Amino acid sequence: MPQLLNSHMTSAAPSALKARKTPVQSRSRATVDAIFEATIQVLLRDGMNGLTTTRVAVRSGVSVGTMYQYFPNKQALVYALNERYLDSLAERIEATCAVHEGAPLARMVEALIDTYWRAKTERADITRALYRSVAELNNDALLHAFAARVDAATTDMFASASDVTLTDAKKTNLTLATVIYGTVRNVFERGLSKGDAEELRRNLAVMCQAYLEGLSARRQE
Amino acid sequence: MPQLLNSHMTSAAPSALKARKTPVQSRSRATVDAIFEATIQVLLRDGMNGLTTTRVAVRSGVSVGTMYQYFPNKQALVYALNERYLDSLAERIEATCAVHEGAPLARMVEALIDTYWRAKTERADITRALYRSVAELNNDALLHAFAARVDAATTDMFASASDVTLTDAKKTNLTLATVIYGTVRNVFERGLSKGDAEELRRNLAVMCQAYLEGLSARRQE
DNA sequence: ACCTGAACACCGTTCAAGT
DNA sequence: ACCTGAACACCGTTCAAGT
Image (cartoon, rainbow over all chains, first blue to last red):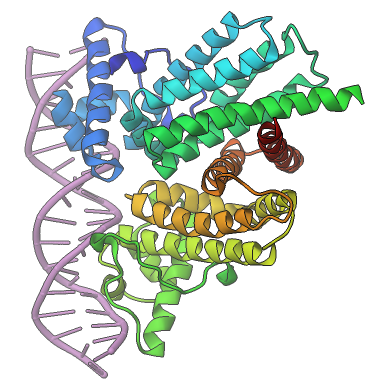
């Protein structure tokens, strides 16, 4: 589970949600990691409503006071947790994009769906818990930063396609990204069975391909 | 704003979230409406975090004690609010389905996207607030009931298409519904500009059409 | 049948005191 | 440089008393 979250701290956070101090000694870095770990566990066990500072403190083995040295309030803690998660997700997407530079467009789309899908489904419980927790925050800045970063990577990738030259890679990317990420989220919300989810993944790919073929076809006319 | 919410009480609610008593006298019905109205307003002004029972009570002009006569806890209140909203949304989709019985498949898809899109965007602030509030609940039952009801209507509609006979209307519906609703939600999360959102709506329609054409084409081979 | 609001348990947050 | 935990303000929820 720790592998899902890495420790880069990107900073799109509004000041009220920013981490209070950056851990400098190894002792305090361990403290912060313990707090994050405890937060996920409490979130999984008791849900967003049962996520109390006391419970996180007890589970992480530090006092509430210590928590408040690193996070100015409870929201900031949840915010930072999502920040870590999105950061690692963005890295994975960027890696996929790097690998597929110059590939045929269809393979890029397939790879993007695959990476995103896998990242979200490999720990479905965590994905669900984080989807819920982030909804409570003033999350615009967080999600915009994530979207901007990931969009940059995927747009570049699409623009490098070996078989098609997109007239407007940015807009094509916006359509594909919104549809793909939105669909994946809705699959979670509907709680689809593994079989249905898998079929939907394939159909999503087919839809994206059909859309891309339509784009080329329209250009040739 | 009241028109967005009607007062049918469907009941997919787990017992812990069920409304405590049904209003029978006109006085109490007015009370419940006032509570709902106040809840939306507090939600819009102060967000999910600032939604306190005291604030809702003051704004609605009733005491906390009265609120607790109708809703066993704060979650139940938010749950009921979402229930009302989803109920009215389902009604609108059912109406669209009824109108398009026997129409060509492409027009059905267009109409479905249109209805859903319009319902979500006409009061974007409320949509956003409710998306956030529902994420906090144990919302599986609520969303499943909504999905089941709406899926039934749209599946029937698709099965009645005049130009195409679907081999598996249920699965086609699942794909289209998940992609459409998911995409609309993601448009909100990304906070797209009106222009971008409008373009995405069109592209979503194109993607769905391309997918349907692919279905027919594959059958002919 | 419906409403009130003081009272209680618990949670978020602080801060003086510790190592 | 980092940690502790009692103390305080405030919120969710109840219930005895009212109309």
